[in-house]
Amino acid sequence: MTQLQEDLQTLRGLLARGWTQGTMARDELGRGVVPQSRNAVCWCLLGGMDRATWGIGPEFDERHAAVCEAIRAVLPATGEGAGSILYFNENEKTTQRDVLELVDRAINKVENAQ
Image (tube, rainbow, N blue to C red; front, side):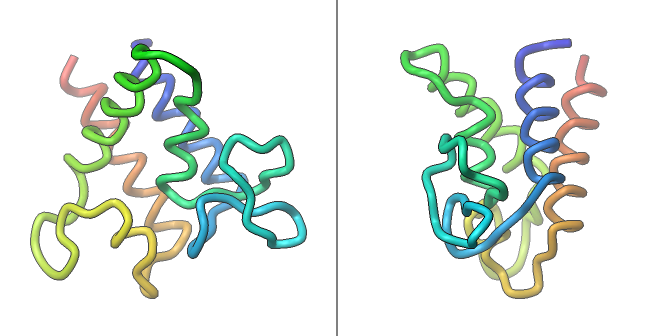
């Protein structure tokens, strides 16, 4: 399994545990917290990406960029907010299931590219 596949699987696991809108992450009381907080229990798509690839140094920047690219590659290409991770997550019609399906599509696309 490549690092990108591992990061996408980690992202999916986080979002399956809990997903949110309006902030990067929340604690069990619903308060906004940083995605890396040990008190975080749910994440938005971007917050989950931050948490899944968290670290210091260029290696982690590259991992984050690779996950962003993989997610953007499977976002809807047309319509309002096309290609925007933030818009997709924050759209009032978006559900946790939609977000998990998006990550699953990214995982499948990466796996099929090998």
